[in-house]
Image 1 (spheres, helix red, strand yellow):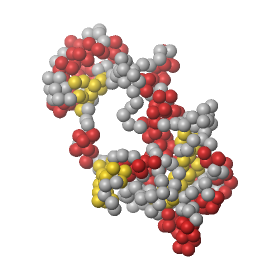
Image 2 (tube, helix red, strand yellow):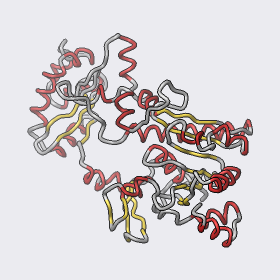
Image 3 (tube, helix red, strand yellow):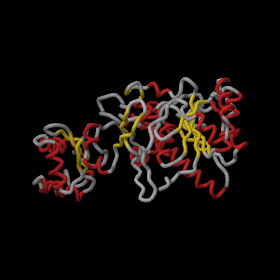
Image 4 (tube, one colour):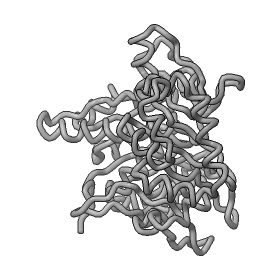
Amino acid sequence: MKRPLEGIKILDLGHVLAAPYCTMVLADLGAEVIKIERSGVGDDTRRFSPYINGESAYFNSINRDKESMTLDLKNPKGKELFLELVKKGDVVTENYRPDTMDKLGLGYEELKKINPKIIYACITGFGHNTVYPGRPGYDIIAQAAGGLMSITGYPDKPPTRVGSSIGDIISGLFTVIGILSALRARETTGKGQKVDIAMTDCVMAVLENAFARYTATGEVPERIGSRHPSLAPFDVFKTKDGWMVIGVGNDSLWAKFCKGLNIEEYITDPKYATNEARSDHSDELKTYIEKWTSARTTDKAVEEISSFGVPCGPVNTVDKVMEDANTKLRNMIVDLPHPKVGKMTFVNNPIKLSETPCDIFKVAPGLGEDTDKVLKRVLGYSEEQIEALRKEGII
């Protein structure tokens, strides 16, 4: 079966995480992603640990299903070659500082002159249209400036970065949405457009009830640990051998929970009868519930509370997630052959389509390993032309 994005050609100038994550998702969906890297250097993440037989597991995890070609964009001939590719392409992606591509003469305004249908997607810390044009952006900057760190962690501890590079990743995902939207619009208008994504905007966009609470009450949300600000019990709880979470999201679930724990009197107790009341008394409620959970193993507590019809789950370590029966059922862990390592393990794409597949099929490319193939296939270059470019250091 054909993949949903087959026929879409993407020139990927992205590096490190945000843009490469975006193009990884698009490649999984079938887009032809040509990763353009610096000769002899490549993406910085090629040198990020951990390594398997000298190969970066990090780089491989976000650059699968792509092709790699090397190109010197500072060389006038290299720039000309890139513009030739742009004429044949559908999308250009990059996550440099806002003025980098313009300084090279390869910004959106220049590219659309030679290909009005091109979609130009850029990811920066604060956007191309910004009052902070010179500020670089990393994930931790976005998490901090976008407000996420201010509500992550416990009140008596410093603001905490989320364990995953969520600022980069959600920016990559929002860019995927922007690109797909621009491709759909192009079907109607015949024109491409610029997709301008700011990491701080993306972090703000996923803070949901933090902004809702502030605009509704005027109170600035603070760090409250793992508990929910307006639902209870909705928190992490100690068990005999680890941790679990319980999510009582409404009064009906509260009634089921109380019946299961044989504390039916709590259903109508004024201190616990409503979510608002339970939230006001969440600390003492947690102390009581933890006496129950800490007397049981995580598996036993999850089994019992699930039998009440109440949402709950274990706090799994990564190894347990990989071995979970549902992880295996949904084919979320995939092994692929690697020419140097032998085998590499990946987390599969979570998008499950019933008619068009979205599964990973190829490990990340070696630096520039597809340069010749791309030039022949896309531009029709001969072996002699390619060798001449190589001798000049353009590729």
